[in-house]
Amino acid sequence: MNKIYFDDKEFQKVDFNIERIVFGDYNHCIFIDCDFSNTNLSDINFEECQFENCDFSNVKIRNAAIQYATFKNCKLLGVHFDECNRFLLSFYFKNCQLNLASFYQLKIKGTKFKDCILQEVDFTETDLTGSVFENCDFSGSMFGNTILDKADFRSSFNFSINPETNRIKKARFSIQGIAGLLDKYDIKIE
Image 1: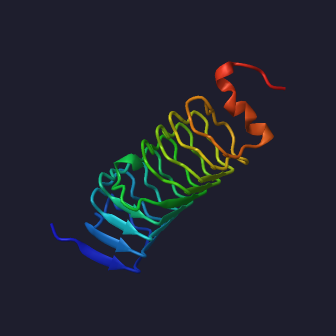
Image 2: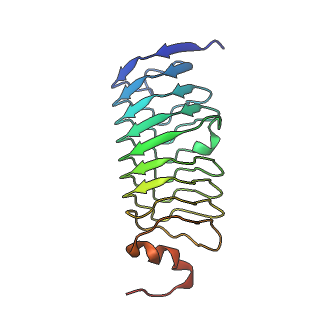
Image 3: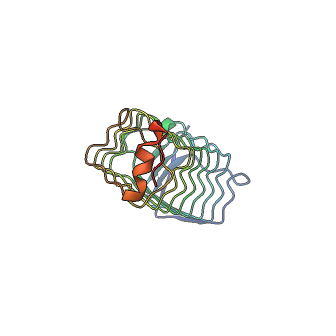
Protein backbone atom coordinates (compact mmCIF):
# COMPACT_ATOMS: atom_id res chain seq x y z
CA MET A 1 0.00 0.00 0.00
CA ASN A 2 1.44 3.37 -1.01
CA LYS A 3 1.69 6.13 1.54
CA ILE A 4 0.66 9.69 0.81
CA TYR A 5 2.61 12.56 2.39
CA PHE A 6 0.95 15.56 3.99
CA ASP A 7 3.08 18.54 5.04
CA ASP A 8 1.82 21.62 6.92
CA LYS A 9 -1.81 20.80 6.19
CA GLU A 10 -4.69 21.83 8.44
CA PHE A 11 -7.72 19.61 9.01
CA GLN A 12 -10.78 21.18 10.65
CA LYS A 13 -13.97 19.51 11.85
CA VAL A 14 -13.30 16.27 10.00
CA ASP A 15 -15.20 13.22 11.24
CA PHE A 16 -12.89 10.35 10.36
CA ASN A 17 -15.71 7.89 11.05
CA ILE A 18 -17.40 9.26 7.93
CA GLU A 19 -14.42 10.43 5.88
CA ARG A 20 -11.73 7.75 6.18
CA ILE A 21 -8.29 8.97 7.12
CA VAL A 22 -5.78 8.57 4.31
CA PHE A 23 -2.96 6.12 5.02
CA GLY A 24 0.19 8.18 5.02
CA ASP A 25 2.72 10.41 6.74
CA TYR A 26 1.47 13.61 8.37
CA ASN A 27 4.25 16.13 9.08
CA HIS A 28 3.65 19.45 10.85
CA CYS A 29 -0.10 19.06 10.36
CA ILE A 30 -2.77 20.60 12.55
CA PHE A 31 -6.02 18.82 13.41
CA ILE A 32 -8.75 20.98 15.00
CA ASP A 33 -12.14 19.67 16.22
CA CYS A 34 -11.63 16.32 14.48
CA ASP A 35 -13.28 13.05 15.49
CA PHE A 36 -10.93 10.06 15.32
CA SER A 37 -12.96 7.97 17.78
CA ASN A 38 -13.02 4.23 17.04
CA THR A 39 -10.93 4.72 13.87
CA ASN A 40 -7.92 2.70 12.80
CA LEU A 41 -4.74 4.80 12.76
CA SER A 42 -2.42 1.80 12.63
CA ASP A 43 0.81 2.27 10.66
CA ILE A 44 0.10 5.99 10.08
CA ASN A 45 2.89 8.45 10.95
CA PHE A 46 2.26 11.72 12.78
CA GLU A 47 5.42 13.83 13.15
CA GLU A 48 5.30 17.18 14.94
CA CYS A 49 1.53 17.36 14.57
CA GLN A 50 -0.86 19.34 16.76
CA PHE A 51 -4.24 18.05 17.81
CA GLU A 52 -6.76 20.47 19.35
CA ASN A 53 -10.25 19.59 20.62
CA CYS A 54 -10.04 16.15 18.99
CA ASP A 55 -11.65 12.89 20.11
CA PHE A 56 -9.38 9.82 19.97
CA SER A 57 -11.52 7.57 22.15
CA ASN A 58 -10.83 3.89 21.50
CA VAL A 59 -8.65 4.41 18.42
CA LYS A 60 -6.48 1.60 17.14
CA ILE A 61 -2.88 2.79 16.87
CA ARG A 62 -0.86 -0.38 16.36
CA ASN A 63 2.55 0.63 15.02
CA ALA A 64 1.46 4.25 14.47
CA ALA A 65 4.37 6.67 14.79
CA ILE A 66 3.59 9.59 17.09
CA GLN A 67 6.65 11.81 17.25
CA TYR A 68 6.75 15.19 19.00
CA ALA A 69 2.95 15.48 18.96
CA THR A 70 0.95 18.01 20.97
CA PHE A 71 -2.53 17.20 22.26
CA LYS A 72 -4.62 20.08 23.65
CA ASN A 73 -8.18 19.73 24.97
CA CYS A 74 -8.38 16.22 23.53
CA LYS A 75 -10.29 13.16 24.63
CA LEU A 76 -8.06 10.06 24.50
CA LEU A 77 -10.14 7.48 26.38
CA GLY A 78 -8.83 3.93 26.28
CA VAL A 79 -5.92 4.68 23.94
CA HIS A 80 -3.17 2.02 24.04
CA PHE A 81 -0.08 4.13 23.45
CA ASP A 82 1.91 0.98 24.27
CA GLU A 83 0.97 -0.36 20.82
CA CYS A 84 2.57 2.61 18.99
CA ASN A 85 5.84 2.48 17.16
CA ARG A 86 8.29 3.28 19.97
CA PHE A 87 10.92 4.97 17.81
CA LEU A 88 11.08 8.66 18.83
CA LEU A 89 7.69 8.34 20.55
CA SER A 90 7.03 11.65 22.27
CA PHE A 91 4.11 13.87 23.09
CA TYR A 92 2.80 16.72 25.25
CA PHE A 93 -0.69 16.69 26.76
CA LYS A 94 -2.56 19.78 27.95
CA ASN A 95 -6.08 19.70 29.38
CA CYS A 96 -6.71 16.19 28.04
CA GLN A 97 -8.80 13.27 29.25
CA LEU A 98 -6.72 10.09 29.14
CA ASN A 99 -8.87 7.80 31.27
CA LEU A 100 -8.18 4.07 30.79
CA ALA A 101 -5.18 4.79 28.53
CA SER A 102 -2.11 2.54 28.62
CA PHE A 103 1.55 3.56 28.60
CA TYR A 104 2.67 0.05 29.63
CA GLN A 105 6.45 -0.46 29.33
CA LEU A 106 7.05 2.73 27.35
CA LYS A 107 10.13 4.92 27.67
CA ILE A 108 8.65 8.40 27.61
CA LYS A 109 11.15 10.38 29.64
CA GLY A 110 10.44 14.09 30.08
CA THR A 111 6.81 13.89 28.98
CA LYS A 112 4.66 16.77 30.19
CA PHE A 113 1.05 16.36 31.27
CA LYS A 114 -0.70 19.61 32.25
CA ASP A 115 -4.25 19.84 33.66
CA CYS A 116 -5.03 16.26 32.57
CA ILE A 117 -7.43 13.64 33.87
CA LEU A 118 -5.44 10.41 34.09
CA GLN A 119 -7.95 8.12 35.81
CA GLU A 120 -7.26 4.38 35.73
CA VAL A 121 -4.26 4.82 33.42
CA ASP A 122 -1.69 2.01 33.23
CA PHE A 123 1.84 3.30 33.87
CA THR A 124 3.17 -0.16 34.79
CA GLU A 125 6.89 -0.56 33.96
CA THR A 126 6.91 2.84 32.23
CA ASP A 127 10.01 5.04 32.29
CA LEU A 128 8.75 8.53 33.19
CA THR A 129 12.10 9.93 34.30
CA GLY A 130 11.93 13.71 34.50
CA SER A 131 8.28 13.86 33.48
CA VAL A 132 6.08 16.67 34.76
CA PHE A 133 2.52 16.12 35.94
CA GLU A 134 1.05 19.56 36.54
CA ASN A 135 -2.39 19.58 38.18
CA CYS A 136 -3.31 16.04 37.09
CA ASP A 137 -5.89 13.65 38.59
CA PHE A 138 -4.56 10.07 38.93
CA SER A 139 -7.59 8.35 40.52
CA GLY A 140 -7.18 4.59 40.11
CA SER A 141 -4.03 4.81 37.98
CA MET A 142 -1.54 1.95 38.21
CA PHE A 143 2.15 2.33 38.98
CA GLY A 144 4.24 -0.85 39.29
CA ASN A 145 7.96 -1.10 38.60
CA THR A 146 7.59 2.39 37.17
CA ILE A 147 10.61 4.69 36.91
CA LEU A 148 9.63 8.08 38.30
CA ASP A 149 13.10 9.44 39.04
CA LYS A 150 13.07 13.27 38.99
CA ALA A 151 9.35 13.30 38.05
CA ASP A 152 7.29 16.21 39.35
CA PHE A 153 3.97 15.41 41.07
CA ARG A 154 3.83 18.53 43.28
CA SER A 155 0.51 19.86 42.00
CA SER A 156 -1.10 16.51 41.14
CA PHE A 157 -3.50 14.49 43.25
CA ASN A 158 -5.30 11.17 43.83
CA PHE A 159 -2.22 9.09 43.00
CA SER A 160 -1.18 5.96 44.85
CA ILE A 161 2.49 5.17 44.34
CA ASN A 162 4.27 2.52 46.39
CA PRO A 163 7.89 3.67 46.93
CA GLU A 164 8.91 0.05 47.52
CA THR A 165 7.85 -1.14 44.06
CA ASN A 166 8.56 2.01 42.03
CA ARG A 167 11.71 4.09 41.54
CA ILE A 168 11.11 7.60 42.84
CA LYS A 169 14.63 8.93 43.44
CA LYS A 170 14.60 12.75 43.48
CA ALA A 171 10.92 12.82 42.43
CA ARG A 172 9.05 15.85 43.71
CA PHE A 173 5.84 15.70 45.76
CA SER A 174 3.91 18.28 47.76
CA ILE A 175 3.16 17.85 51.46
CA GLN A 176 -0.50 17.20 50.49
CA GLY A 177 0.62 14.40 48.16
CA ILE A 178 2.50 12.44 50.82
CA ALA A 179 -0.63 10.37 51.56
CA GLY A 180 -0.43 8.95 48.02
CA LEU A 181 2.98 7.47 48.87
CA LEU A 182 1.72 5.81 52.06
CA ASP A 183 -1.53 4.21 50.83
CA LYS A 184 -0.22 0.65 51.16
CA TYR A 185 0.17 1.11 54.92
CA ASP A 186 -3.56 1.90 55.40
CA ILE A 187 -2.81 4.71 57.82
CA LYS A 188 -4.64 7.97 58.42
CA ILE A 189 -2.81 11.24 57.97
CA GLU A 190 -4.52 14.26 59.50
